[in-house]
Image (cartoon, rainbow, N blue to C red; front, side, top):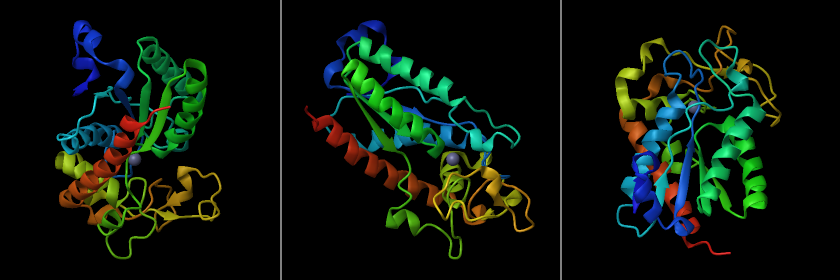
Length: 253
Ligand SMILES: [Zn+2]
């Protein structure tokens, strides 16, 4: 049984085997993704990823409830770019905590955050520990994009190094969802201004600049993005997530 949380009636929800059902909570964002991709890139990808996951799971015996995508996340590093919206860390923490508390109250035991924006990861990790301790439920943290998978890496154009936020891969995924939302002709390449990222230190989006030095807050060159590449990335990422969902399904304390 795979269904969308918001589509169930109360009576239908009462019938759900909540102890053995995974609630997948997709964590999106509303933040700039360069000149060419929409502000809701991560939220759009989160929604599409759920559809791809559902497709990949069609022959599996699994109970999965897809929670509505949380459309805003922790985007502090993008707040100086027009249109980016962010929760403050503790607002985001409390909002997600309260959702988990409600789900636990209704008897769900297995929760999984589907992180579709890297900035959301620290809070998701924190909450998973707190909620597990407070409510004796099992919250898992899954990463949405299989960006290290060799078949995903193979989609990146030659010479496009450091492709990540707002780059070729994410832009391709949005094109696979709705090509009309991407204005590829306006795209510019984002390169690293300082070495903070290389040293694995904390970074700000303004560290990523165009070749002229203008802050652009994206990594990589989106100009090679295509719908076909996006479909490959979404499919492979969904297959990877499905492996984890099967592990979570079979998890027993
Ligand atoms: Zn993104």
